[in-house]
Amino acid sequence: MSPALEARGVSKSYDGVLIVDHVDLVAEVGRITVIIGPNGAGKTTLFNCLSGVEPADAGAVWHRGDEVTGWSSDALARRGLARTFQRSSVFPTLSVADNLRIAAENHRRRGILRGLAGLPDPGGRRAVVVVGAVLADLGLTDVAEVRAGVLPSGTLRLVELGRALCGEPDTLLLDEPASGLDDTETEEFHQLLHRLAARDLAVVMVEHDLALVHEAADVVYVMVSGSVAASGPPGEVLGRIDVRSLLFGRTA
Image (tube, rainbow, N blue to C red; front, side, top):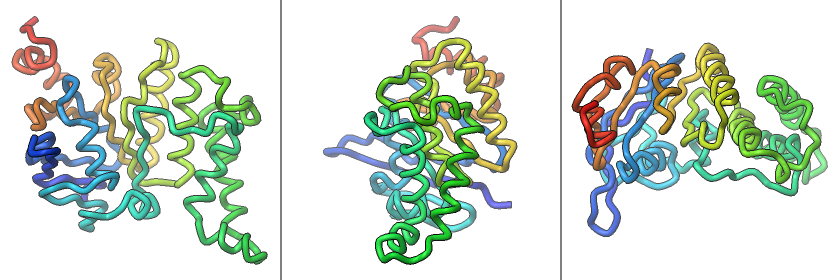
């Protein structure tokens, strides 16, 4: 089976400064792949190149065996690659359910066009089913009609994830999804990640919480100054003295 997502020699520069430097990365179906590294290491820029937010200057991106280098984020989302961002993109004045419904309907644009034309919309019915399932799966049913803007940050993170899941992706890119979560929420999120991966999703995360990384990750990539400095199982990678020195500036 082909990897769900693969980067081959991906590079990106801004104003002549190399931010991502010939990165190779492989994310497998059913596994949680985590990218870690200090601030400024190029992690989010790499995510932008993988998800079509901006094009890479060099290298190639492959999704499920097909090269998708240069594809837009919308085209990749319709293909099955969903992505969340560090900053929440939920609509604060809308309910949780409406936030998810918009995401589900946007994934099915033909349904929206049919609705504008007054035609039957089978895709719209599918969107309703998907939203209900995602609400239940993420434990958001009780706040479905609550305005998103009044919810705590931990719940908003789940709403953001729910919006991505409403596109029924096969590959999920999460940029610092545990940011703002307390210990209980982090543990629940850890369990959720494993449930998602068990459904034959490929989960790729940028994350700073090393305790979560150690518990949740199947594979860890360490980025420093735009390059991959180490990769492998979390216990092996996080235990390396050189990696700890790169992450913390010390050897213990």
